[in-house]
Length: 158
Image (cartoon, rainbow, N blue to C red; front, side):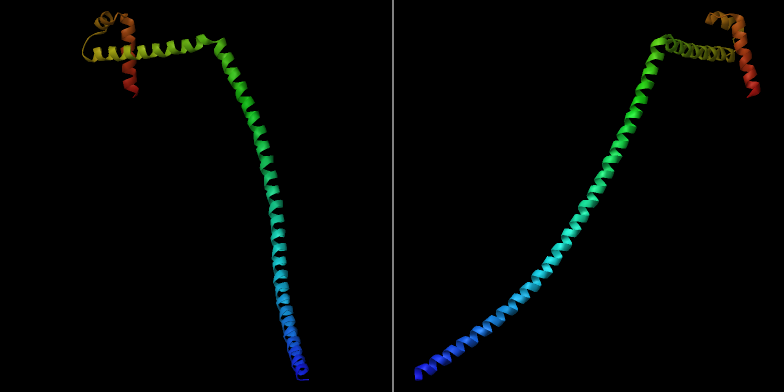
């Protein structure tokens, strides 16, 4: 009987320890379940945010593609206009190459005329008369007198 009482006490003690372990395990599982639920909510929120970001990114990329396409069309139009202008310039240049040469010749002539006037004015200032200036520069006396007369008119006006 002594052994039966000891076995009974140990069995009760073992049963009590088992019940305590089961209750503590149950508390631990409840705690873990709450943590898991919290993590699940956080994960759902992240998935929702990521989905919103993907939609926003799609909208932005659509806008960028549309804008680039529009700018590409505008660029093609501008390039076409530039090509037309270049063709017009080539036609003008090819049709009238003498105009450019004439313009250069006129520019050179006006430079020569200005230097001729300056030379005549210098010689006149130094006291040489119109006839001698004409002989020195190989010009007509009337031309020299005309240039000197223009100088006088300019100085009167200025």
